[in-house]
Length: 331
Image (spheres, rainbow, N blue to C red):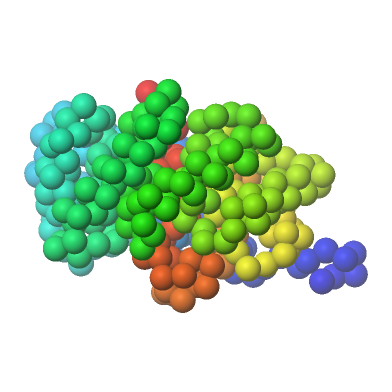
């Protein structure tokens, strides 16, 4: 702590911010006509696995994608960049694409579902499960989604399928997940009145094995402290990113300080200003960088996540779901 009593900026958080910016610039070289949200979706993915984006590799994967999909394929829509980014880090990009396509093909019972959400869900399943377990995970995902639908029929829609996939690859029991989601929802809706945002946040909180009241109060404290510090966090879809903060084993004060430091640092960078990006969205990325800094991609031992298979990329997956949900929802 410096002489002003503030925590010095976490060096790793700063490095994550720099990597986010660098990857965004690299992706811009490849995708010149796409919007910044698309660039940041891909950039955030690479930060989540602590890798620098490779423009040539992504261009190569784009050729593979075009060769193996039709012009109007859901793989070439809003999810194109996340698909290409994940292909680019795969040992065999074409095999990765084929595996995801195969998983989508196993979702024929969800024929009424938006195809792009199925692609997102398929990528999450592919990233976390061995091929022999995939049918069971798809069944679990479907049951979780139906459970969401039964509890909140007017809130639950296609955009919740990737969240259901994220929950399905955890080691937690389906009924336990559904019950915990609802318990969290009933607690947080009192603070965050946006029902869709609160439902998304409840999906994230359900993974945290902490007691319901403890993790919900922790999120409220983080949100309230950020507001007191003149760095109010958004209460829309970005709220779910704040939910990942409940899993960090640090004080609320340190978490808030690191988010503020990351936010202030990003604000000085091109494309991250109040007028170009907006405060709420930038703070979502600031929080994500803090999360990425404290859950190393190589670690599976984080106590707060117990044995969940989400330990490697939970923050990245949540961010990608949220970004793509915003893009698909408004398109």
